[in-house]
Length: 579
Image 1 (cartoon, rainbow, N blue to C red):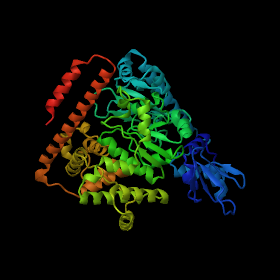
Image 2: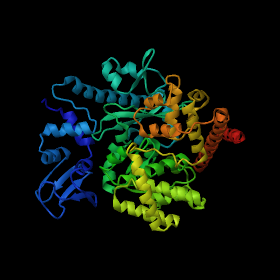
Image 3: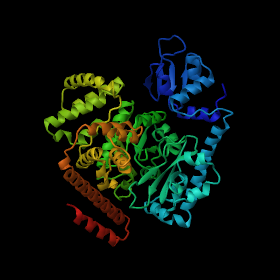
Image 4: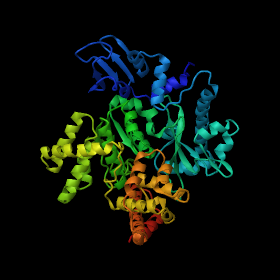
């Protein structure tokens, strides 16, 4: 058996979650930052075997042994070093490179190199004449050179192939293909990122592994574009800013989790350095596993508009189900963290108070969804929905706490909640035999969400309607992704089964399509339903833009700058458009 390359060993030790590995063999209980259980290597009655996720190591106090995930498998399974590494690499989908496999080893080296050169290209662009527009965008949002250079922010010019021309002679076709930096067109390769501010992602060891680009064009449907999945970049394991902020997160033992790069940069610039961003990617259990290496305490600091509220609720449930202590911070007035600090009345002190006042997810959802003012039938439905989420929590203490909170918030006696819990649990287990990963859109109960779901249902059954739909109207990420797939491929498939194959490996999207495909809309009314839903979304979009302009005006006035008459004119024009 050939020797495994150091590159593979390093990736295994960086990416494998030691708690997840060892908890399959040892019953571990949390105590402070670490987990403890009975030693798997000797007989004992008091737990002295410790697992430290933040250090990615284990230690047996009784025997004085310790090590990482690889050494644990060697000791427990009595296997060789290479067998242990192979086992973990295969489980975590890490490509195994062997010494002597020069082609594969060289591929990884070249992928790191091409990303490093691309990053230099983007950062140089930002500080050149071609980057003046991007630089102005950043300065207008109060980001200075210090923060720009610390996070290697760059700019991709409005050209089809500038980066490709720069790099294609230095790398072979395989590296170009697998880098994710380029797309194929009829004329050949073109740059993936064009006319965008570029934010690089770093590995735990500080190597550039991918990028996210923020469009500078209002006509672009996709505001943020990330690198695709590559051998280096796996979205469900990566957080923006982790390389720079993980030491502070470990030190403070909690993280402020935001939705995007500008929110991250704003908090970091204000001195809140225990921050991470999910960067436009829906939060998943794999994110939770990756985050658990550093802390199990999260304060969700999402946008306070409807989309942000729903995202916070979904993420809150996922974190609770993965054993996290969760709070949700409410910025109010549809603000995001970036806009919050642009307003004169807000300061570090007021933000720290918001952190202290952050709500438990159960309290947050009851308040934000106005549950207590709804009718008895809606409150009963909400109770059942919460129970379905709570029953996915494995930790008994967390689960019992959630049941008590739910009981107190809704004014329902705890025995009734427990009674429903048992019934729903039995019903859900039967269903789960065929479908372990359920996706629900029950939280999407606003006018905007209902309109987006209704349009999606129409498109699933009649893809030709996609030509009448504008992508930018969709702020629900799940709906947006599916609608985009339908629009891009509606002439390439003939039935829903084929659409599911085009969706790929996202269980949330696949299950949402399956759920909506059951209810077939009436053919005679679909045009009028589509028209009504589009009008609803257009009105919501206009009102959102009006709020953004009003916030811009407040920020300009707070900074004693003269108002742009075009801004006032645009506000007046938008107000006339609202139906």
